[in-house]
Image 1 (cartoon, helix red, strand yellow):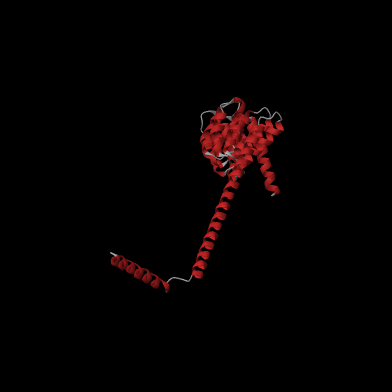
Image 2: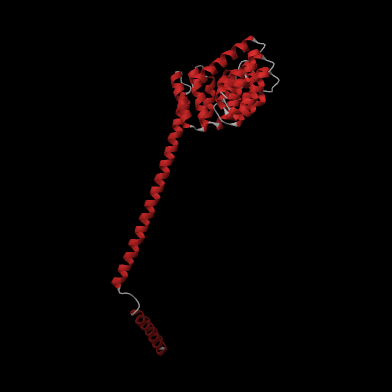
Length: 288
């Protein structure tokens, strides 16, 4: 029994000695191990520090963006509240500021100002909504139903280059009270309104034909010359006169020749206007 135990101890001792000897040449010295461990620890700490700094920088940028956004939101709310100030100057300045901000949240508060009791506030709201542009069109069209806001709403639509404004403005050409506002709004739109206005020259309603003629004269596009020349033969004397006036503003040579037959127009007012018009053109030619 003792012999067996001694045999086991000898075998364990031999194995332990073998492992220890085999590792001596391959394992680094104790100092080298410590240096390597220190280097790995230092590198790990450096990477951790860099990652932490990057994360902090990103977090700082995100916080700055959030704060800036909140500041803008707060400023919008402040200006919207000022639209209800009893002082019209404050309301006007708030409307101007909101227009410059251009945020869509400003649209409804500004649209309500289209019926403000002070014309300067209304005009400021018109310009502000025009600066915001197309996003405001739908609501401004709805405000055309409000009699008190209609005039300003029409003016606003004339400042926004969006095809959706054409039909509402053209429909106002038939409204006795607001037809002139719609005419100037269409004239301010300019080129986008020409095609529809040329169609209106053939409308059965003489008021629509007259207003379309006036608007085309203000736009002064050469594409209108031939259709306006045809209107020199319109049964209504005022439309003939308006067409001649529009051709005068456009200044195309075709129009100057076309109005000469109106010197024999049956209406005295038309004849007198044409005489003055031709005399003015003659002076321009001489001075040139």
